[in-house]
Image (cartoon, rainbow, N blue to C red):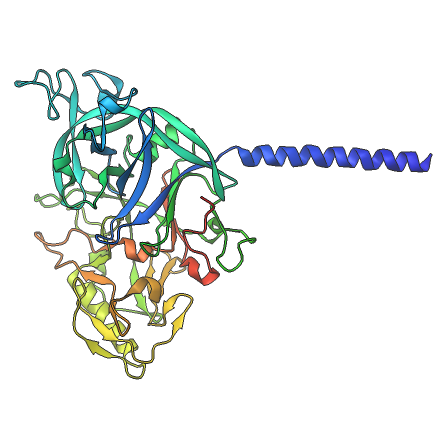
Length: 452
């Protein structure tokens, strides 16, 4: 009898275990996020992604723009993508929901034959080429886009199609200065029709996205839409997984406003992502900064912007000079390190001398961006602070943005793509925060260590 009871208990426990195991598998199969792969163009350093668009779906290459308010692309060059290649592509008619949600103006009746610049009774809005900094009048359209889901946040799952995705159509002229093969821009700004906002709404995802930029043109990065986990597999032990969302440190996202000329007048909101830096450290000591430059002014001057289209972090002239002075004093303490000729776009370059290498790159003086709380700081090690331009020479990977005057730089700093490489950065629209890790290389993790 005892053995029968024991057998029954074992059977019951095995059944319960099987139920919980199935439940865990089903939960893991439910995607909390979608993702897009990222790459870095070797010739331009632009951050790119590949998106499936249309029916049947074709894969096209886009630049990734944190400041872009709506995805746009060349819809009129058949070799790239056109209405004739997709059965689900259609232009938005005046008075339709896409025209309304984008606040686009009705183009009415064309004064010439319909073509790329105008179709009767459609609506238009301005889109921006982020590299050339030029605007174009683009037509609002809708089509189907397809992304991959994640399984457990660590590997690629099934394809998910999003119909009636709002985008803007322009022609090939709007592609000037973009990397070869790019057909448009994936906009991620704080707007109702950015890629991140539309995916959050259509796929019922958390209102957040995270980017992990590739460390070189030879490796991949990844962009997650939705909630964590964000799981990577270390290069030195691919059987081990790390959910790097537990490494995130958070700071507040701020709203900034367009520049105005009237004293004390406030312009319209800018949909970019802004944070507030309170100080910059070199080897743990703060550099000299006029702290008022770091504040957000009603005139639209000040604060810090985050950008994927600026290749390197840009600092106002006085801040840049102060950083260079502090960095140079520290780095020249290493034997045989000395000044070298400048290498564009950098102004301060050095011979490596006896500087050693580490997992986090060349062992140069550590730079840190301190946000509103002294405990919240972004540690920038050699892999993100300097650029090795040859076997013997490296340059400080920051750029002088000019003086912060009425006609000069509009922000104190722009955190650029190079400083974000190998770092996971999350933008949480629900809580109004930006989360970031320090370099993942210290744990032998690269942004390519996702199971695509």
